[in-house]
Amino acid sequence: MGQAEVQYIVVGGRSIAYRLRAGGSPTLLFLPGYASDMEGAKALALDAFAAARGLAMLRLDYSGTGSSGGEFANGTLTVWLEEVLAAVDRLTRGPLVVIGSSMGGWLALHLALQRAARVQALVGIAAAPDFTEWGAEGDDLTPAFRASGRELTLLDEQIAVDCPVRLIHGDADTEVPLEIAVRTMRALRSADVQLTVVKDGGHRLSEPREIDAILRVAAGLLETP
Image (cartoon, rainbow, N blue to C red; front, side, top):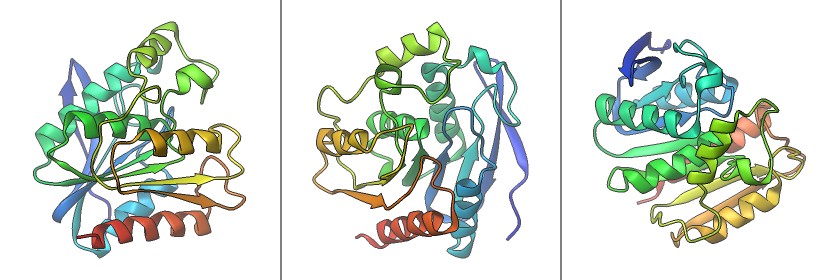
C-alpha cells in the first residue's frame, strides 16, 4: 500500500507533478491549499484511506509548488484551475469524489461546476472560496492572483452545484472564519449539504482527531446511495 510514484503532465507548458493510485471507482481527488502540496498529512491520510478501500486516488501539485515546475509567483487561481481540469480530464475516468483543502475547496467548487456530470460528491476542508475578497491565506498574493480571484468569486450568488457536499471547519480557524463555511452552505444549490464543526479546530485540521473526523465524513459520503 505504498505511495504511487510521482509522474508529470504538461499543462500550458508547465510540468505538473501528480500521484495516481490505481483502484476502483469513484476516484478520490485531493486539492491542496494555497502554498501547500500533495504530501501533507491530510493528503497522505486520504491516500491511505483510498488504498484500504481499493479506490483510485489522484493528488497533484499546482505549478510553482511541491514537485511541479514553474514559479510560485506566476500562479493564479485561473492557472491552477486549468491544471486541475487538465489532470482530471487526462488522468481519470468515471465519478469523482473531490476533497479540497482551504483554497483547494474553492477550486473544488469550480471543478464541480465545470464537470458536474463527473463530480459525485465534494468535501471542503476549511474551504476558502472568495478569500481574495475577504482575507488572505498568505501575505504574498500577487495582483494577478487577486484579479483571478475576483473573476472566480462564488459566494454572492447561488452556487449551481447539486451533488452532496460536506464542509468541515474548525471553530478556532483564524484564517478562514466559520462564517465562510456557513455562507458556502447557504449559497450551494444542492439540497444535500452538511457542515461539520470541529471544536477547537484551527485552519490546518491536521491533528489526528481532526483527520479522523475528515475520514469519517469521507466514509459516510462513499456509503451514500
